[in-house]
Length: 253
Image: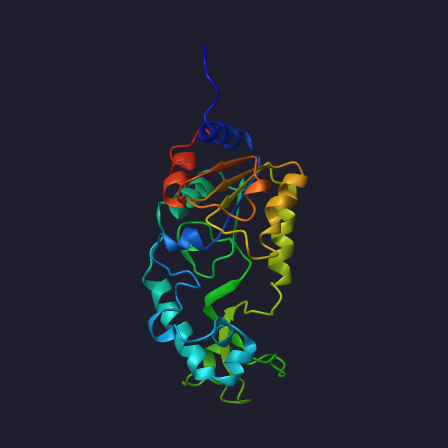
């Protein structure tokens, strides 16, 4: 007599049958590539600063050089990092099965894109991209690539400062990204939540939304998260371990 199906095998079978899959990734996914999480980045020289000083418009306006320098250090870390086995498993599956997988990322790096998911939905922006601190009043708008050197660089014509293209404390998520994420979640058959604490909203609400719409929800995390109760199954492990086990060699999916 056969016993119960192990959770990872059940999830693999559900992925095999699913016409649409969503994967929500958090900081734990990128941490396996050596990118420090936001809190972990507040070490050494930066340990004496409140996070709001380094990741808010108010903090930037109060000390733009300080904030720009901190983000320059974080950008260097992103550029030096490489996609891990979890990123590559998702990118490989997306390449073999176009249109079936949507990655929704809370991370601000480009590792998903470099691994093959160029259309990753980025809820919290792009740390490698610049935008103007103030909405440009000119028509057409000034080109950020032509900003003069400085910390931060500024527009040579109007003096507007550049800032990192990320979502800071107190700012709303990009509406287009949030709408795209909710649309994907509304129609997915399976949703994986990978490497996130489930503490940051509204991203944390996407798992519950998927379950209410009828999706099978699985959480992949080595630690407990605040949204474990939203999942049908919880697998304890890292993204670089579990995602290849679920997706690699899955040409039959």
